Image (cartoon, rainbow over all chains, first blue to last red):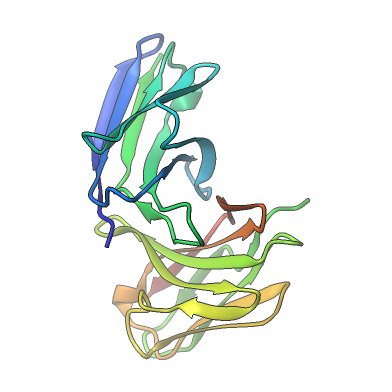
Amino acid sequence: GENVEQHPSTLSVQEGDSAVIKCTYSDSASNYFPWYKQELGKGPQLIIDIRSNVGEKKDQRIAVTLNKTAKHFSLHITETQPEDSAVYFCAASKDTGFQKLVFGTGTRLLVSP
Amino acid sequence: DAGVIQSPRHEVTEMGQEVTLRCKPISGHDYLFWYRQTMMRGLELLIYFNNNVPIDDSGMPEDRFSAKMPNASFSTLKIQPSEPRDSAVYFCASSSPDRPYGYTFGSGTRLTVV
């Protein structure tokens, strides 16, 4: 089955810096890669996703890139703000029929003012 | 929409007691998921339903855990008897037919078994 590895487990940056979180997956048939943000005391929330027919996707200050050959994908946050502090999860799945999401272990991002 | 609603938000119980966690998915969503989150194991999928039918319960850790979905608007996760190692945050999530991978999570139930 699919296995998703995520790193780093913790990441501390200064406000205004960029942050990058990386994930690798094992199943070459996976073709859907979402990212979730979990704030303290809340459930994870979908913030951006990408499918394998696209190499990069942007939404304001966040972007996700995908390298299918290397089987890895990354989340990029530019101009970080204190409210970006949260735990971020990557996930992977096949998009044919329904296949459950397999989540990474999470990255705790701390943005210091 | 009020989102996915879970109750209770916090539950403290003694070892050996029965615990029931409740979830109301978003109306119109046909997939429902139960996850457990711990520091050691991260997010673990316990079971998921499609149209009220359990599809995959391979993540349910033991026979002490059971889940039901009697109708499209309600699901329960029951632990009987509870043990201290069951202490975790339990999340319910749902997704819609047109976006099955866009999970919407509830706020979770923090369970403490003493």
